[in-house]
Image 1 (spheres, one colour):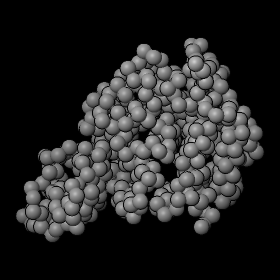
Image 2 (spheres, rainbow over the protein chains, first blue to last red):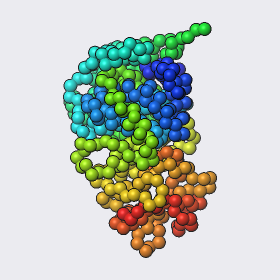
Image 3 (tube, chains in turn brown, red):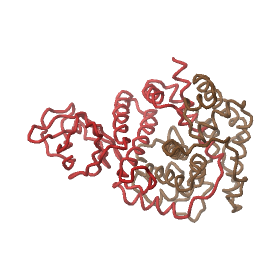
Image 4 (cartoon, chains in turn purple, cyan):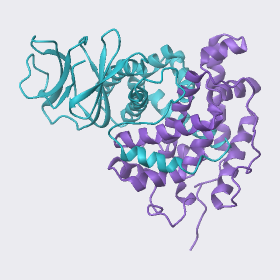
Length: 217
Length: 237
């Protein structure tokens, strides 16, 4: 389990993504959450510096509106601020938890706003176009992104469709059943089989061992 | 073990369950280690889907707004929803709904490590009801005369307390909620154990116009008449 969760998620332990200038740059994401729980504001800022860009990219993908996407990210980080005390690092990575908060909030907003994607969700922005800086961080993110996109492409079409419309489009299972004209049970099965397969594909394509670049002395 | 419920794990990890399925699934989780393990893994897969997105950069001042918002805690004032249909709906109800959703998710995560599953489940059920109340756009909020947070009252009289920073009750003690209607004796309206950070607490009795909702610390198991002075007390509804 531990080995799995360290390889499935593309986002690496983002220590490697931060710059050394920052006050908390040497701390793990999980240690930062522990500091946030004690009211440490710079720790919250550092988590935002590490995860905010991906979080915003996710919220924007769901909401397609810059202000709403920022609202979703802001609310998720404030929820983190309020509730960091109950986070338990043993079972989950802090970055996963934060992205879960962001996604849940974005989906809530998109459902309320009826700002629903009706088109298949292609990539509007060319890889790297929005992240002009040629930093190590951008390179890692691009690598991860390409790996996940490649895994998605290997899914059977109906499974990919169910997962993408649900996760990026914010559609509920019953909405998908209606939209795609298939029974609800079929949607549930496709989503389950698709996500299980995606997990296998991500495991297979994960580099051996740690995501962190190896520094040898 | 029921395949049907197990299969819902994927929809839950993608935030795609319809409300009824979501409630069913969350009620099931405390009892099913297999689903909890599976969910932890599928949340990681969903995280990978998040990384696969690319888009514009957030505005440079978002970071500052987040830190300013954190500084303003525990007021829970989130500047959002400007284009919302009812501009006067208190921002708190939105923020509290987020806090509730978060707390529910967190409760599940915490349950991974906790052997106290029955209390986790009961807390989750209570939070669901409280979340329904604070998510009601027609609910109104009432300031607290004592304590930090708000009272949220739905039009039908159901109510919930959104409390900030009430530490867990001391050993052998519990928090007890009271509804005080006019000159009548306070009515016992539920027990809760408290938790660090934001907490949502359902009020078990209906709350009417002019009522006051209060919280006292009592011996474990609760009492029928308050024995201490309130640590939380609302204005009149």
